[in-house]
Every structure is written in C-alpha cells, then in structure tokens.
Image (spheres, rainbow, N blue to C red):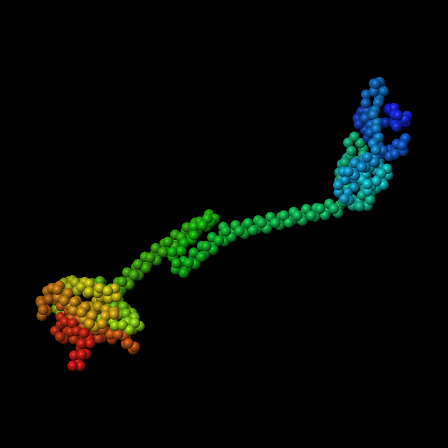
Length: 434
C-alpha cells in the first residue's frame, strides 16, 4: 500500500489532486497502470487514472506519478478515428463500465453493461471477434482487443448489413471477373482450336475433295500447323504425287494403246480403224461447213505376184517405201494417209476439190514410178500404183460410205484401164454420159 501526494503551486491556491490508495499487481511490479472507470473526488467528473511508479527522494518511500485522463478527450479521439457510417466504438473496463465511445454511444458512458449479452460475448479473452447486437440493438460484426497495461478493452463494431453488402459486391465483382476470364479462356480455346485443329482438317478435306474430282495436282498447303498434322499433310501430298505420276503413266499408256489401235504396225500409217474414225469426224465437219472432202483410194498393181516372186519380206519393204511417199505427200495437218488393208492405201484430203485431189494423185503415182522398184511380173517391169479419186460435199441423208464407194468405183475404173493410172469419180460419170 502506498500514498502519492502532489501539491503544485498555482496563481490561486487550489487543490487539483489529492492522495489516494493505489494497489494492484502491476503497480507492485512497478509498471504502468491504468485504472477502471472512476468519478473524481474533487470535480466529480467521470475519468480513469494512469499511474506510473517513480524513484522518490527517500528510497524507502514508494512514490508514483498519477494523472487522470479526460473521457471527453478520449471520446473525441474515437470520433476522429471513426470513418464508417453505422460503426460503433466503445472503451469498456473489466467491470463492464463504458469509459468512452463514439457520439452515438455517449449516453452510455459511465453505465454498466456487464449484464448484457453484448458484454458477455467478450468473455475473458484479450482479443477476438463476434457477431451480435450492440448496446443500441443494431447487429454488427465486432472486434475487440485489450488496451495495453490495462484491463479495459476497445470494442469496434461494423454494420453487418454494410459489411455483407460490401462482401456481396466483392463476390459479384469476383464472379464477373471469373466469368470474364472464363469467357476469355473459352474464346482463346475456340480460336486456338479453330486455328490449330479445325482449319487444318478443313484444308485437308478440301484437298481430298479436289483429289476426288480428279485434280491430282492439288496439294495440301504448307501452313504452320500443329505438328500432329504434319505427317498427315506429307503423306497426303506424297499420295497425290504418286497418283499424279501413275495417272500420267496411264495417260501415256492409253495414248500408246490408242495409237497402236489406230495405226498400222507395218507402215506406221493409220489403220482401218483409225481411218474410219477420222473419216466420220471429217465428214460431219465438212457437212456443217458445206465444204468438199476428197479421198484417194490407192492400190499397188500386181502386188500378189510381187509377193509370190520376191517373198513377203521384200513385199513388206515395198509397202513401207510406198507408205513413206504417201506420208510425204500428205503435207497438211488435216491430211490423213492410211493403210486401208493389204496392198491398198487411202489418203484423206479435207477441203480439197476433185481437181486438186487429181493433181496430188498424179504426183504420188509419179513418185512411186521414180522409186524404180523392180517387178518382173508387171507389164511395166516395175512397181506402180492405180489411184481412184473422189470429192464430195456432204448432203443430208448421205454418210461417209458414199465417199468411199465413189473412190472405190474410180479405183476399179483405173484398174480396168490398164493400171498405173489415176481416175476421178466425176470423170467416170462424164464418160458414161458420153
């Protein structure tokens, strides 16, 4: 137990402090001490005291410095720190007496609240939080902490509705951000899927479709695709190249087969099949254009006797030499020399009238004579030819057979006249008429 006595001198003598009993474990340990709520003995104002032990002049006498704290100043300090509407700030001692508070709680200063559920929620802890109704009946979320060197606790309450509203806003904002980033991720995934997966598949499908339409020159474009598609692209392009090569080989083989089917192996000229196909096409074209088409039917004179005397090998050589002359005579692209069969040849001359066809036939006959191929079984002593010439303008109801028939008639007339001669179909009709 100790007494403190401080009597300062003022202009007017007045006692502003008096001795009092101070006790407690903190004071005994000579530490800073804050009292509970008290009422001043002199001014009868509510206050609480702060005491700190000091070294007196007489070491045997315990001494302290004690001062009272103005609760209005504490309340003003609490008010200056209060920032939120609906919040509550209280300073309560360990007996449950309200020491200070914000303006909304000023009527409770000096009152005991130890019997309220609010105070009982504090328990005996130095700090903590709880939810409940404040002393004014408003629900809040409270947090409290013990004031250092004191049994008093500072209690701060925030309006529960405001806190929950703010929490709801933050949750809504979080959900919106989550939705935005989720949508962004989906868009990126969609774009990446389109670019890296769907687009390559579509491109490969378009290339395969072009293959299906017969475009073997199509190739999958060399784009920067996902590496999983690169082997497929390379394989598809390799397959296309192999198909194109095989197609080219087949085309060449078919062309060769067509050539074999329409050409004569011995002479190298068009065979009967090729001649017939070409004659039908040229006959139809001449009919559309109303222009003439001429045909020379050629027969090697006494060729059977030539084969019998000189053999088939020499006969083949003779036919090749005549075929060469026939090819040289057909100077225009539209002209077609052909081996009609055996020792018979034909020369198709689209656009030629009978006079020009006769001139060509005479040149050919003289060229064969100039070969001077010995033929002992022939009256002339050498190989000669007979030529029948016909030229017609196709008319309705006629086919190419009329031209062949006319040229054949002229050929037989040439043979009847002693061979090694040229006869035109029109000249036969004129001779018959005379």
